[in-house]
Image 1 (cartoon, rainbow, N blue to C red):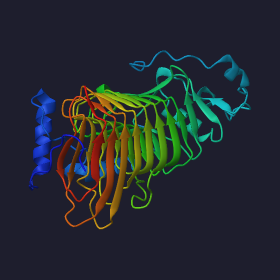
Image 2 (spheres, one colour; image 1 turned 180 degrees about the vertical axis):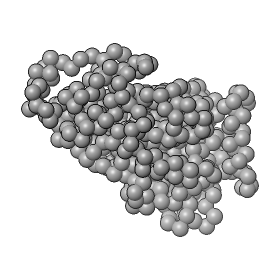
Image 3 (tube, rainbow, N blue to C red; image 1 turned 135 degrees about the vertical axis):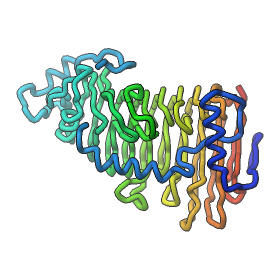
Length: 395
């Protein structure tokens, strides 16, 4: 059932993806009239995302000057924390359960490449809280969190990429791990320092095949791709589904491709995120929920009180072109309290589902949103998940 103004699917044509990308590319390049289509992150090119990211996964173990542009100066660790840290302990352990990154040689001076020292700190602090205290720079090799990692950023602490030339990278990876806690990370993707001219896969936080993880108050700015990217495991994409992930108070700004991409996940919750000022490469949405293939799971996706603003490709988009296949799927996506007043391609766009004899059912709901533009339903097979918008307020 459809409870608000919508557009229904046109006849499917072979060149729908190419045409859709051309329309949005024109819009992103020079503005223009509002259109009823919005580009998906994968579309006909979705296979490239996984293949490029897989190359990055194999490469990330190898390493490859200014302070973080938007981070406030790092405050030193509190005297209580410093006093509780065993200053003479070469292993960096703390009797109080908190260990400083500086115990592992992290400089945090805004210019030194701290990637190796930060990785050593992550690896050496399992079972404790690792406190990031300074303004660290890292190369595009990125950092891997481990099972039971607990990493906290002190007020003013940040990590910013050094100059790089990469189509694909991840600043922090939660890949095939469980029971991770990440508090107040401030990540600057340094898109202005990337000399690459192609690619859209430079992620702030990449979550692949992880389970039972909580991220609180993350800030991801200026990413070459997405602020946060969520998908199945790269090592076992058919069964390594990311599940039980809670992300509170995420702020993404200035990212090129997306504030967040959810490709696949089971019980994924975002509470009170702000996704804004997203532009640079398609689709440029605040949130894009877009499966790459029939292995994807979109179950118990809950987006609570999100705000999207000034996103060139639209506020929230759900793009389902690649999901139908031999395995039947049931989708459950619930969005409540969405506010979008400044994303010109559309506040909430649901599109591109062609069942062609396959089964994709379930529900997609938006409850009590405040939108500048009405729900757009485009190229949607009526045999697919029901799409409803209730309690809509038009700003």
